[in-house]
Length: 279
Ligand SMILES: [Zn+2]
Image 1 (cartoon, rainbow, N blue to C red):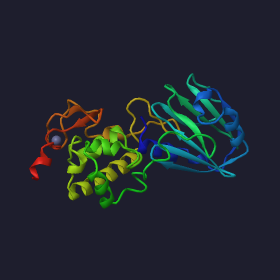
Image 2 (image 1 turned 45 degrees about the vertical axis):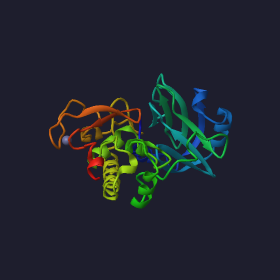
Image 3 (image 1 turned 30 degrees about the vertical axis):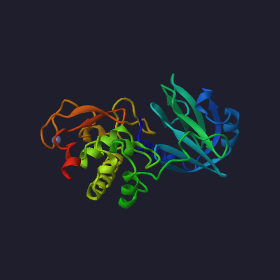
């Protein structure tokens, strides 16, 4: 599932959209337009010009002039691509937005969990209104994160995945940041010492920035807005590496279950007992 670095990669790769005008909208699968009818969606887009592309967590926001915003969430297999208008339409193409001068924004989604919403028209996706600050653009100050974690008895990994606390982190980058911070994902969130909270924030920032520089992680099917895969998979240190040696200590990376999610951990570098040792 695309996480913050992948959505940021899509956002950057779609920069050529800015300045183009929407001349036609073809909704092939009505269910990808959420919270409003395809007809209203079409009417509100046609004639407007793309003025900017923003991102909050895993949401992409397409800003239009006069004032309108299209919210996109790619969920599992959603893909936004800027193509030449005459390129063949795929089996999983659900939406086509024709642009002037030239080009077409296409939405493909094999599993069809993703969707489009109009900000200010109809219902918004569940969880959007409670979305926390973006983990890359507005990282929490250590004191604020510490205070939030102090109220949580669940595993630290669950806190990182909670989009209300900070937006954008998913399974890959939670595992990677915790490894980089040498913290076990199963540590109770409220057991982290102030130095560990600072280490975690630094590790998370480094992990996300590196992944953005590498154009995101492509494991199964992620492609950016030009149809290019990301290069970050080779930079991953624990995610998807169970059974392989840890680059830090040589121990075998394990896959365990934390917060209901498959979780990759080095049993030596990320020691669970650390919480008890502090007394
Ligand atoms: Zn290790």
